[in-house]
Length: 117
Length: 116
Image (tube, rainbow over all chains, first blue to last red):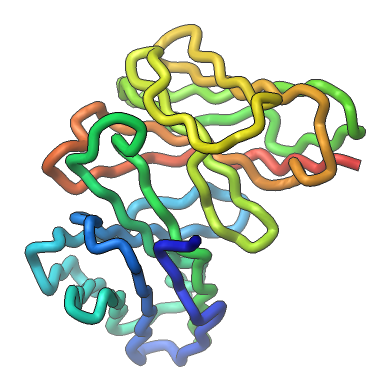
């Protein structure tokens, strides 16, 4: 039972254009959502997060939008650069959970973004 | 300096063997994690330790045993390796205070385990 899903395995965009990466979730208890970026042969690195009480968070070229009613979030990268080419993982957490759910990040399966010069 | 390091980076071994993967972090974090990335690319948490105490133990075969000798290290020992154990294993660490704020976990580069 995958509680976080990224249904697009890959996305290809032209440099300078907008990249939109999508993520859907099923567990309404999640209260933080995060995006991680992963280059080949490296571990995921944190990119941006959003609290479930917000609908938008922006950091430079990266903006995350959250639609709680649709249980959907998206990451927008504007303008896209070739260095943005990587795998992007969406993740979610019940930040105040105790016991065996404490600190448990639930990841999607990732979307490969390719930005062409 | 590497924040979260894992050794080895690649591990090829035969079924039935016992192997260990080591993880060290120099970030001063007191919570460490092991994740498995399977063939379908999902990253799934296996274990988490906080101050050397096990706090997350997902449904993982008991052939997998984490060991935390101190707060900076979390090693993963796997007994009687099976073909299905082939995957990339990531170690991560974070501060304890995951409650109430955007939690950030810092990941190691991964260990690609291939069981033949």
